[in-house]
Image 1: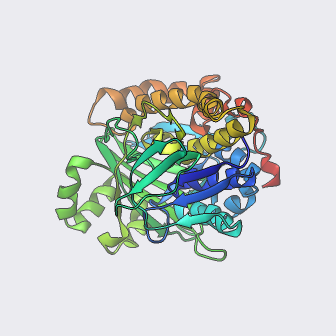
Image 2: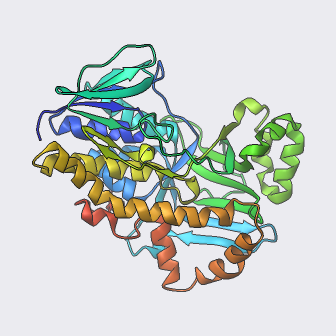
Image 3: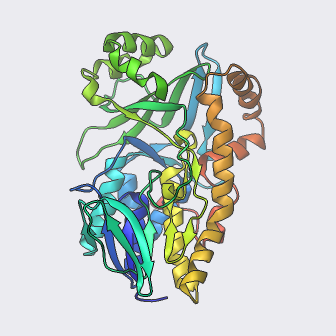
Length: 405
């Protein structure tokens, strides 16, 4: 499977990583993005050991680590100061392991600069409406009525709003208000932790250190506040100082960050969908990343799963004897890991974002105490890091050597 002409829809982490890998494997790549200038959407994310293993193969791990913040664990307290979440990477049994909190813009820049450096073709302003197939290959149709050439393979990396799959989008009840804010040395936050505070499961405020977007830039943190999609309009109509008072009542130490929010223009509302495509593989087509599987960010797996999907596709094309076999291999190597994390994320999300009373009680009184006891503490770390089920071994990937980062 050498020298295929491949079109990739979407310039997110999945699309950019796939473009780099497939280009380096000898395929001709064209990336398509709906925006006039491709760019990141969102604020902060976590790079887990799974995603880092792929970035090592791409030769980009050190640059990503340099731009991000080293995160040694997750810490969450309820409104009474009781521990509701306490998960650390040192429980993995992987020497020196840590997560990396990073701004989406930083991850995007690292991947996008590599794509541009290698001369991969990018077509912008191309909003995709559909695709069609004939004897010569599969083409993309665009919203302006134009059509691409016929490709040997189309990779759908366009995200959970993909037009290629009619699986219900299943928008989750809760989204989040996000902001990327500067942090100072005397701020009352541990810049090695992702910290959260909860009032039952209906309110959550969190702070994730995300490093710096420029070489010598200011250190930042992603600040987020959970909010029901149905309540967003009411939140927009509420005076910002009233909302800040709500946040401060739950976590008084957020005052320095709240003081740096002077306008709603600094805040972005993100919605999330929990969906799994019914047919991630079709004739001359495969979905990767959120186009195949999307979920809430509660376990921080989105970008990491996308990077694993891209690696699996590259490996499938390298080992498959036919295109159909290559795509089946790529899907097969990822299917169990994807299915498990779709299920476990659906289970955990209501514990932290829901209107229920049973879910937070279960979280605080049963799961939190159990998580401090071996082997539950190790299982929790494996779940948090994306390493549950040993997904790297089946893909021929090694765990990252953290001492070299």
